[in-house]
Length: 524
Image (cartoon, rainbow, N blue to C red; front, side, top):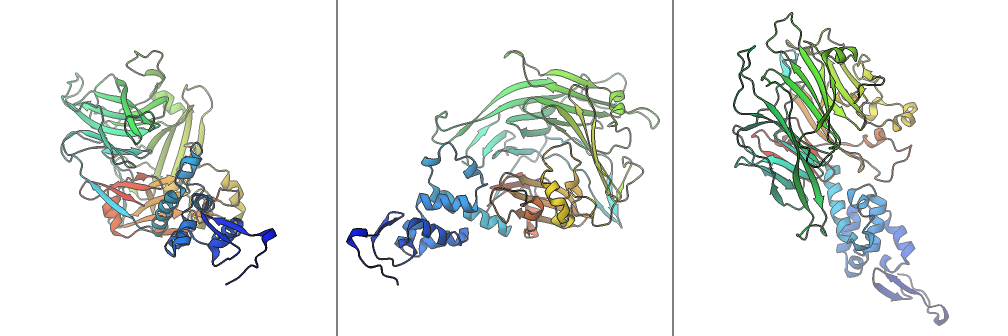
């Protein structure tokens, strides 16, 4: 114990987190503020929370908003609470927030869920996802899917859209726990796909009744899409104490002038301003006949508030697609379609183990991925980026695969300038741990968190990657360095969460589907 001699002319008055002492320092809470902060900067977040339990003076010091804010600034400057606190910096309980965030990242770094929530969803008719290409991965008698079906739920910004047990679509706010109905009429409709992105919910659906066509005996149904504006209301805008949501119909339109068969494939994407649809139709054609293909772009920017349908701004015919080198024909490599503010992108892939009537030929040596970008107007140069996956078995040739083992020190500065969020890059994340394929992942780039689901036939892994240093990124702190720290979830989590190989979420939670068709939410 240290003692400081009393001097009336220079009395030491020290106040730490509301605890005032004169002259005597009995423990670290009696230190001057700057020294106290210097000492506790060496503590881990969990240790800082546990220090609240030591004694009353420690509890007062470690729960003060000033100290808690500094701890947040040191340990978690990239979390959403810090990013969203700019406007209300003085009206936030930093003590409460720091404890919650420290707990969250303890579970994230341990790859253990704090809470597992299960939601039953409708298992009957009313949802028929768009089919998959007639192809599969096969190796030594083991079979696995390359492409996966769409789920009957979607998530964005903490809002989960799903169909409950009474056949109605419901929006569930994962943060507040509130639920409200989606204003979508299910009567006489079968949903094919739903997607929530950029504050717009798009539900693609078909009529239950079939429509006869003169040139075929196959059943066909008219297909439509309905778009909803989804807006989060602040507490001041809502009549409730907490923030709530407002959802209203924006557009409804027919996807194609003719009804579609179940053998037809269509893929879509949307942003806040545009919607893109790629359509592949066999139309019962024989092997020697041409497959119908088209790509259509709609604009969500209406010229009038009374406009009921979006406006078509560009149609790419099969000849246009052939000229742009993205026509698929009978051996499609199509994986997905993407949009940004000015371009549409087609992602393609092929695999050495891929077989089936729709498998592309010739097969690549390992795994091939390509991205092709075209201006929405169709006027301008074509962008192409590919990764032939023709290096060694460890894919060491590919500097974009997220594992740090695939990077050397000479690549790190240039790799840091590589923005993986841009859809113009080939999807190298699919083969980052070859022969495993990354089937789905949750990426919260602003927070430095990634949850990855990988599969190699009968082997599955679900892993958590959290930046070892949550400080603001510099050129030296590459994403590769962050992914050195991989922690795997328990094996049973695949069955509970990744059974359909589709996960979504952010740093707070991950949403997936279990082997019974129920939605699983794991909270950290």
